[in-house]
Image (cartoon, rainbow, N blue to C red; front, side, top):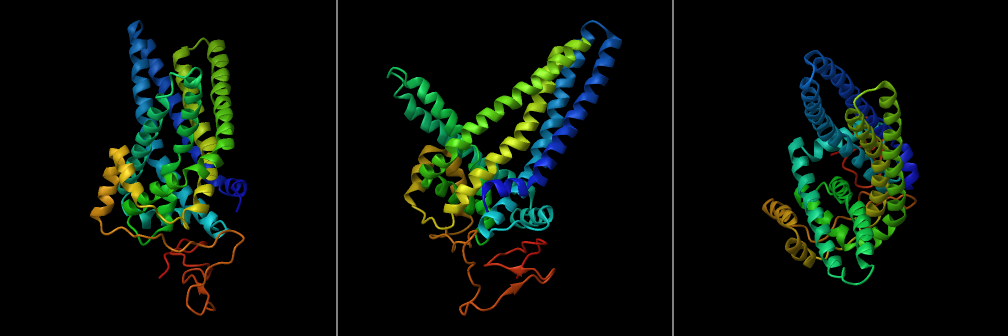
Length: 350
């Protein structure tokens, strides 16, 4: 499936992200009204104190809802995207499929958080290492500006490595989450040239979309708050929340699909270059920690599993004769390739 088809086909997740973001925004507005009423009742410094209280409470609400529920929604979305890219079809019940895949792969949510944090931390450290290499050329006239542009591009492109690695985790059910994530990072950097090239045009679109996502909410909120005579600091914070919601729901989801499609097209067939483990460990303490957890769980697999069927290609057979067809014991859906979960109902296959 093409990235556009997957993006439009998984809009359920995008609108769910919008709904959660809208809930956070509404809760923040209600909380603002209550804090302002209390502040006006006390008068003087009371108004500013309640404004600070509102900012603190809004941050707590945002982090609790977006960082927990948002992460779980993202994980389900990644599972569905990975299935669509490797099988050429979207699960019929996307939410149930995503839920079952996440529950199976990460028995406890804290395992997912640990994996995600380690991968994200490793990528950020590796990005800084790239920046240091570019910084050595700053003495060349005009090179500093070029380096800044390249850093912005690399930062956006590498910002989705953790999601790509998570998608790889769903493909590699025979490995632990730490082992699959570790391999996923290596595969990403092993194919960095192609993946960054694929990300070039998308990154420009993301930069333009992000600019609009910031400008429009700030403009609207500024007009409304100024006309009503409300506190502009509160307006700025609300506009910030709205801009983040729009970006995370629509723009980030598009970039996620584009990067995962590029990644999943090369990941299953990539023969891992194992000297990259040592190199990445030397560049990133977080990757070294991730690699340590992977080795602690057992020997690393030398070669990736056989590549799943790609969209438009012939599906792999499930036995030596190549004639038998498997069916889901729960809903009867035909099973393509060596899938571990039903693409329709999400049931685990034996």
